[in-house]
Length: 99
Image 1 (cartoon, rainbow, N blue to C red):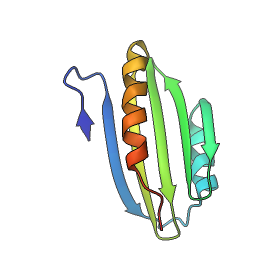
Image 2: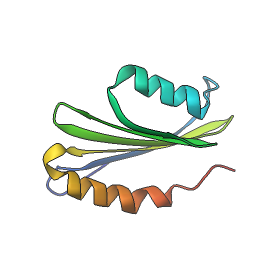
Image 3: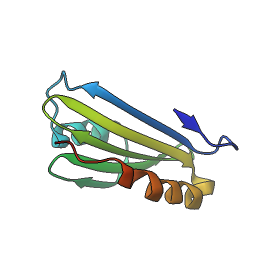
């Protein structure tokens, strides 16, 4: 987990074994069931979703394969959404598709 100098943006990156046999679609559905999602996009091996909750914007991208899940979770206050969007644009392309 990384937090901005002003504690306004948090980035979490993780990986895990796919013990639940999730697919990108089933993992995205789980987020949609728990949050009031404002944006979602489903790819062949990944998904992106975002929502706002309690004054915080949350952005999630997961890369899902049969064996592993790689994820990045970025959150920032709604009041600093421009800063959060700039960070998303820089971080997300660094996450490569699973082979």
